[in-house]
Length: 410
Image 1 (cartoon, rainbow, N blue to C red):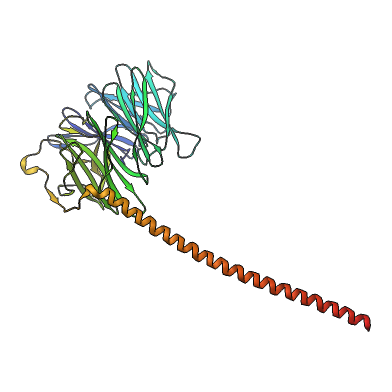
Image 2: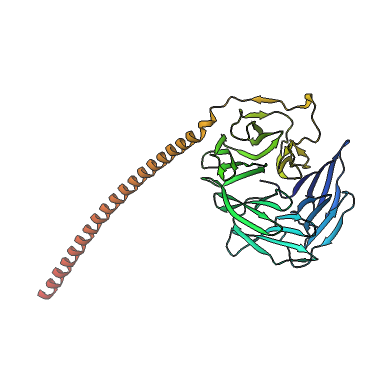
């Protein structure tokens, strides 16, 4: 899942890295000479923050150590204006915020705990004329690991939220900000086990979803898409023991899927909008030895469309993102790996799971028979001992009677 302490921002002219380190939020950007030195944006802050851009301004929402919200804004990335966002809304420091500015309003979506353990409330509010409006509960949901919910702005007033509505169900809800209109919730992903990782990207027609399901015996990398109201059949791309860090993005009309297997990056490409895929390949270009995944803001063009970016585990510099147009010599080289026919993988996996369930059921029945046999033997032995004890009691009573009669005759 996304690292909540790191954000990447793509603007027209540069690529920025924002991250939390030792109580401060820092910023670096990529220039012709390489990455600049870190610039401190705010200090004595909580580790989780929200970042967005509207027109020419960039806004950073953060929480200080006392739980008070502040907004830092800039139009040139050199000078930041900091403003307190009033006292009405406070954060625990672990709250994820989704910040959406419009003309004169800051719209905010966040989560907060409820009376039920493991269930949070997804809440909407807005900040206008120096004060917060009354919060409105959107839904109750089960937060995902690291990133409780996912969100993306589709247009100026149109957003979409992705969150877990059941233990193994991930749903979507679309909303309009002005006028405020909330759409219905739509289940997208239903799995036999909870998703351990999830990546989603939208284009003009489809929602592309790549996720990892960690089962009892294996880990599966699965792709689906939603087109209008139809959701495609799950396509299992890979099955192994340790899959992680899945990411889907769109580049030059292609759907590109990536994930790691025991730290080794894998890649799979579709040139048909997700209806068919080429072979799964090892990604052999430079890749972080310790990989993280973080939110990417502003990468929504036809050439490159992604909501996430890979980064270094230390230093957080981005990976697998075209900071500049690569030359022919810099293009990605890939090593193809022969794979079975994955079009039949889902059926084969179901059959494999059915056999495993039959084996487990057979073993359970065998164990039940063994337990029943032991219980029967124990019951027979108990009944035998009870009969012997009854006989001894009767014999003891008879001896007492004879002893009493003997004493009387004497």
